[in-house]
Amino acid sequence: MADVHDGGTNRATTAARAKAGLLVLGSFTAVLFIIELINTALLHGLNRTFGLRPRSAGGLLDILTFPLFHANFNHLLSNALPLIIFGFLVYLSGLRVFLTAVAASWLGSGVVVWLIGGGGVTVGSSGLVFGLFAFLLVRGFLNRNWRQILLSVVLFLVYGGILFGLLPSIVGAISWQAHVGGALGGVGAAVLLRSKNTA
Image (cartoon, rainbow, N blue to C red; front, side, top):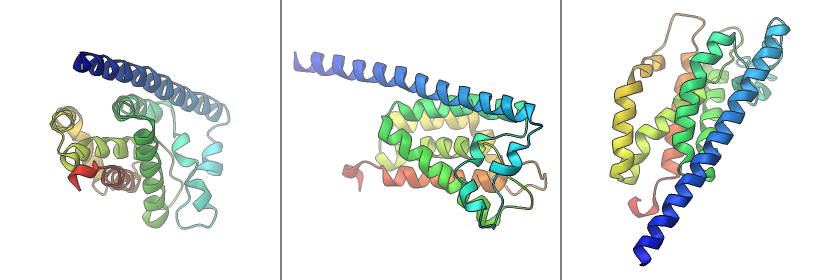
């Protein structure tokens, strides 16, 4: 009877996390679209204020805001779906895991752009996408969890092509620095959160 009860509890917990994850990721994405709508109406003038300016004193504060702004709706749309998918999958492990992975990806992306970013202003949530993706790819191996490893393999087969975004690019519109920083943050979060029994 204990096994049946525990199984039911686990299913209930997973269902609750799934609902909460959809609500959190849906709400965050909605906020991004509202911001982009306002930004578009202002001819993307907000990007000059809240985008990340590398190696500037004011740019340190921009680390907190630059993922919330995008160059246009196409830019936002390209980030929105993978952000929802990866974020939802991370959220299934709990709010603490989700917040840690997001914070590490956000900070990692911003710090790397601030340190080695090119000229101009960087905006966009692609660093979060790469961070959450990297987290999902490596955590199973760190935890020695076969379910998480299987998920990482499936994600790699479906979305592995985005890893080319980690390579230095001569295309100015693509911030590979943000991608690399986000991925490093995601891996760092996976290391920080690895199961104690695998340490």
